[in-house]
Image (tube, rainbow, N blue to C red; front, side, top):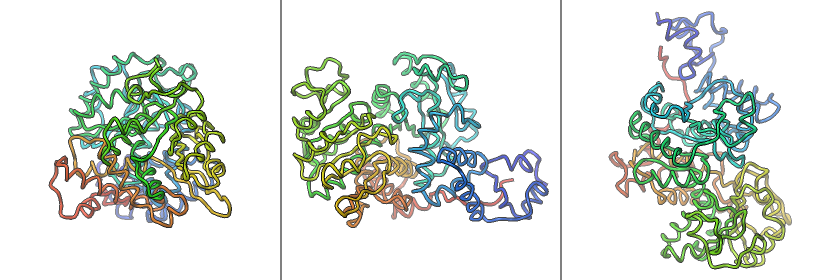
Length: 544
C-alpha cells in the first residue's frame, strides 16, 4: 500500500505525477485513488480532446491563458500535450501577444505561485532561499526584474508571467525537459506608481534601487545560482534597457548567461534579414540600415549585425558606418549630448533631425528596423521614402504587442505596391495586393531561444557568445523554402516548430563542438543524439 504522503489526494494535487482520469485501475487501487476519480480510464489523447473543448468555450485568449496555466498547475503532462499538439495555435496564447494582457492584470488574475520570487530584501540569503526549490538539477533559470516588459514599460512583479512563459516555450517549441527549468522574478520594486497604489498588486511597493545596488543584488544572485545549481544557464529577460546591456556585459565572459531581449531578438532579426537578402540576391555588407529605437534591443541587433558583417569580411568600423540609429530625441549623431556609451558607438557625422521621414530621405536605407514601441511610427511618408531608394525595401516593425507595431504589414505592402519584404513582432494576417497574397513574417524570438536552450541542454557549454546566435539565425533562415519565400515569408512555418527547433539546435550544437566549447563528448550523429534527449508529453509509470 502506498504511503499517504505520496498517494491519494496528495498524488492528485501533484502536477508532475498527476494523471487524472488516465490512472489505470491498478494504479487507482495501489495508490489509494479508488473513489476519488470517476470510473472511466482515459488516454492522454482523450484528455486533450476534452481540454480543447474547454478552450473553445472560453470567450477570449486571456481566459484561455488563465485556463492553461491552471491546467499546468494541475497536470503538467496534459498541459504540454495540449500545447505541443498545435504550437502555432497555442504559442500566441501562452506567450505573445496574450501574455501582455496577462501581465497587465497579473495581480488580479493571480491563482497560485509558479517558480520563485526573490526580493531585494533577501539580499545576503539568496543561496539559502534558492535551496528551497525542490529540484537540484536545474539547467536553466529565466529571471526578470519586470523593468521593461514587452512595450508595457516597468510593471514590477506583474512581469512574473514572462519568465514562466519563456521557459514553457523551451518545452513547447524545442522539447527541453520541463523539470530542469526554473522561472524567477527578482522584485526590486517598480517605478509604476499606479501599480504601487493597486491594492491587489502582489509585489514590493517601493521605487527601484540605484544601478550600483542592482548590480550588487544580481552579483549575489548569479553566484548563488551557480552554487546551488552548478552549470546552470541564466537567461535574463525583460530588464530595463540600461540594466540589460550592463548586466549582459558584466557576466557574459565569466558565466553561462544570455539575454534574449538583446541576443535572441538580434538573432531572429538576422534570420529574417538573411532570408530577405537571399530573396533579393544581395549581401548584408552591401546594405544601409536604419533603426527606429536605440534601446537594448536596437543596440543588441546592431551589434550582432556588425558581427555578421565582420563574418562576411568587413572591418568593425566599416560595419558600424553602415548602421544608423534614431530614437525619441532624433537621429543619433555626433552632436548629441544625451547618448550612453552603447549608443555613442553608432553616432555618425550627420545633420541633426527629429524627423524619421527626413532621416530616411537623408540616409537612403535599404533596411528599416523598428524597435521603438511607438505604434504607427512608420508613416506612409516614411515607407514611401524607403521605396524611393530601394527596389525591395526591407521593413521590420518589430515592437509588440500589436498596438505598438510601427506599422502593419498591410500598410507596408500597400505603400510599396507589394514590393516590401516585411516582418513584424507579432503575427498579422495575410495581405492581398494586386491579386497576390503575401504572408508577413513574424520575427518572434521563439524561433531562436528554445533551440539555444536545447543545444545548451545537450552540450553543456561553459559560455555562449554572439556567434552562436548568428549560427541560430542562419539555421532558421535555411529552413524557409522557395514556395514560402515567394509569398514573402521570411521565417519557417510554425506548424512544425519542433522540427524547426531541432534542426536549428543541431546546427548550434555542431558549432559548440567545432569550437571546443561543449563539455560532453561529441556523438557520431549530433541530431539523433539530441532527438534522444527531448521531452515527450506522455504518462510514465506511477511514481508512487
